[in-house]
Image 1 (cartoon, one colour):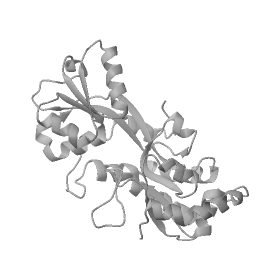
Image 2: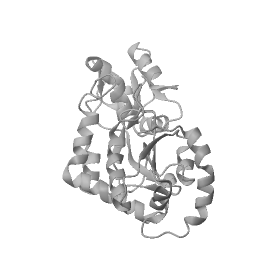
Image 3: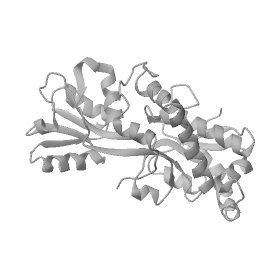
Image 4: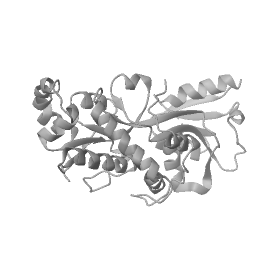
Amino acid sequence: MKKISRFSLALGLSLFAIAGGAAAQETGALGPTLERVVARNAVYVGYREAALPFSYQMPGQAVPVGYLWEICGHVVKTMQEKIGKAVPLVPVAVTDNARVMMLKTGITDLDCGGAASTVVRQKQVGLSYTVYVSELRVLVRKGAGIERFEQLADKRVVVLNGGVADRQVKQNALMRNINLQLLQVNTPAEAMALLAKGEVDAYVGDDATLAAQRATQKDGYELLVGGLAAEPYAIMLPKDDAVLKKLVDETLLSLMQSGELARIYDKWFISPIPPANLGLDLPMSTLLKAAIQAPNDKPVN
C-alpha cells in the first residue's frame, strides 16, 4: 500500500477535482464519491500523522495505524463490496487546517483522523455516527490530595493553547465559584513537563491525550473521575452524499452490534500499542457505551 503526501496528491488530483465537479451532478446508484472512487480506481483516506491512538504514523512504515484507521478499514471494505471491485486504499496525510478543504475538493474520499462532531463542522462536511466520545479530564500527581475539580481552587492549571480546555476550565471555575491560575502551553509534552516538575498542580485536556502522556509513568499520575465536557468524534465524509453516508453508518452499526467496535476499542485504548508498547488504560466511557447502544450523528455546539 503506497502512501501519498497531501502536497503531491493535491497537485496530481487538482485537474480531476475540477473536471469532476460537473460529473458529480449526475450521480447514479453509487453516489458522487463512489463514482469518483471507481473513476480513479482508488479510495483516498485522510489520516493524521500524530493523533495517537486514533490515527498515527509508525516510524519506517507507509501505512498508518490506530483506532479510527482500523474502523475505516472496515468502511473501505464495504465500499469495495458496493462497487464490486477491490480498489486500492491510499493513505493521505492531512492537517487540521486543510482536511475539510481536501474533502470538499475530492482530494480525500473519507477522513479517518478523528474529528469532533460539531454543528459548525456538520454544515461543511458529512459526519458519521459517533465512534468515540472525547471527555475533558483532569490529570494530577498521585498523592497531591486533589480528587475533585473544586479542589483546584487557588491552584495552577495548565491547558493547551488554542484548545477547548481553556474555555471549559474558566466556565467550570465560574460555575463552582473558585479562582485558579491558568497557564497555556503549545504541546502536551510541555504541559506534562510542568506537571512533572510541580510547576502546575493539574493538566486539563482531552482524555486520550492525557492517557497517552500518563502511560509512561502510570504510578505517578492519575485521572480524576468525571469529565468537564464531552465531544463526540466521527468519520468525516463529503457533504450531501446520501449513498456514502448510508454505507458508512450501516458499516458502523454492524461493528457496534457485533461487538467488533468494542474489540477494536480495547485493542487501542486498553492493550499495549506501538510504538512504545504501552497501554493507555482508558476504559470505554459510559457516553461511548450509550452511543453504541443508540447510534446517532448528533453534533455538539
